[in-house]
Image (cartoon, rainbow over all chains, first blue to last red; front, side, top):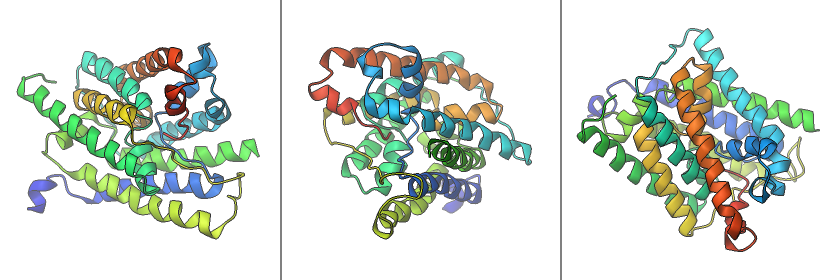
Length: 155
Length: 151
């Protein structure tokens, strides 16, 4: 049963999750900041795009630490690879990455969160709307991935 | 204070990025195989992360009046409304198509997964268009939902 649910084992998933949680917890306990990742994108856009949507006070006041946080993500992943972890190189087609990415960017900003914002921060603050968001994107994500596979679209 | 906050964010990000690489979530193939029910490991990633973040979020504000490097403990301000559900549904469709969500799209660069730059570009474009379309309604109902600072 476990072998079928987790054909690649469970240890790296669990330890990876604990590390992610530690990063989110550190940011909150030390600085009181709620570290979802999708706000990084409008935060960067606020430097280069005029217009009220990217001029909101919460965005402007948080953009500096959001960029530092994102930089940490790159450094952390690079450190892991440096220390012997396997680098990854996706085979997923560029058009899927681009179109899927667009929907991810649009949807996460409209919905106020992504897998980290609603999934980790939202659930950790026991927010019912975040639970609804997580259930929703898991459902549409699973439906889409299975439809795409069934249509024979690969890689 | 600002420098210290940035350093804390950097360190938090390093742990987060390490975790994303360790859990192999930086690989879209792993995410897609989860969404196709071939490997349920990502549930353990989410569970492990929440298992650490939950006590921190619940206990820190009870034990301390304010965080050491901040004025107050923030809140993830989510509301159960049409935008949250519609946005999450759209997010899920994109996630199921490409297997990349915002955190891994950034961490991937550190893991040497350069093709995910396409996803990064797409996410920027999507966030841009969302902000652009939300503009006419800003200040009314949409302004409030657009003011979520957390996610």
